[in-house]
Amino acid sequence: MPRYDAIIVGAGPAGSTCAYRLASAGASVLLLDRARFPRDKPCGGGVTGRAARLLPFQLDSVVEDVVTSVRMRLRFGSWVERGSGEPLVLMTQRVRLDAYLAERAAAAGADFRDGAKVEAVKAGPEGVEVTAGGERLQAAALVGADGVNGVCARTLALGGNQAVGVALEGNVPYERLGADGYRGCAVLELGLVPGGYGWVFPKADHANVGIGGWEREGPHLREHLRTLCAAYGISPDDLESLRGYRLPLRSPRSTLARGRTAIVGDAAGLVDPISGDGMYEAFLSGQLASEAVVDLLDGRAASLEPYGERLSGLLGTHLWASWGVKAALDRFPRTTFRLARSRIVWRTVEKLVRGEIEDVRGARGLARPPLKALAALARVAGDPGGAYRQA
Image 1 (cartoon, one colour):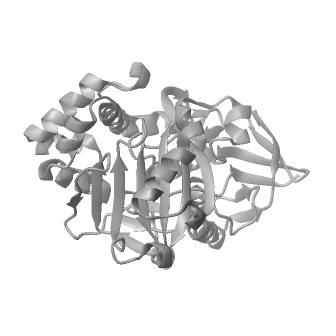
Image 2 (image 1 turned 90 degrees about the horizontal axis):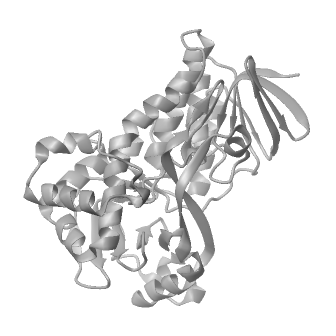
């Protein structure tokens, strides 16, 4: 029976970067994914500067546009545009990004097998056993990176989400929309749907248009998307590759690692509540999981459980703040938007997005009246279920 140091299930951003780091450290790694690559995946396709800073290589070959400004408004009101001209978000497509990351993992030495469906996962005190494509495989450790509906978290009783968001998106060719007003600019439509927003994101030859909100908005997403499209003169027939997806939002009480197993990325519910973005969380969890596996292999740790504790410590304050702002935008949309669009708040947001501030704790030294007011509003609004508390 083939045996590896680590088996990683799922070759998305979290899984592939984890595999890359482990293989680069000299570990024998098997990276499995049920889909044949290249494969697309529903996603806005943005990689913030904060997320890109975590990668040990550049993404230039798969970047289609670079967002340097954000245009936003509340309930189709007056536009506000913010941006210093510095790069904020690298726009790509998951069909290209994920293939590139898996290729980097394979080039580093990982055994990458696509089209390999995992049928069973079993964990024991000495290692793990995975059945994929009818073949039994063993490893000292397993990292589940197989998404919100993956087999790993469910089988291993890891994770557990406190809330789920939903989104619906499609692509519009620039010849039907016009590229001039969208190059280098991310457009956000706030207040259109509870628990979310609408967007127009620039790509190489098209724009990605979508809407997202709380799971209960699922039956109404097509109507919300039609309303958004009408505001831009887009016919529903103009949308290509229309698809919906679920966004997992992790409970802070969920277990991310047990014994020789751990979960990362969407499988762990690691999505930012306010933006719905999970790239930073995917790259960070992949990095920390790889470090935990190396510690296990080298005998410095008896399990992967320190990974969960470390990740929760790094993300806890940011997630608390994000939940609070999300709740405030739902409950007090006009006041929250007025504060968020202020130049003082926006400069802090830019620093966070670019990775110049590690997390919201780094913004405390930049406190000004609008920032204090937004923080107070977030505390009043709270987060759904009161799950996160300020660290």
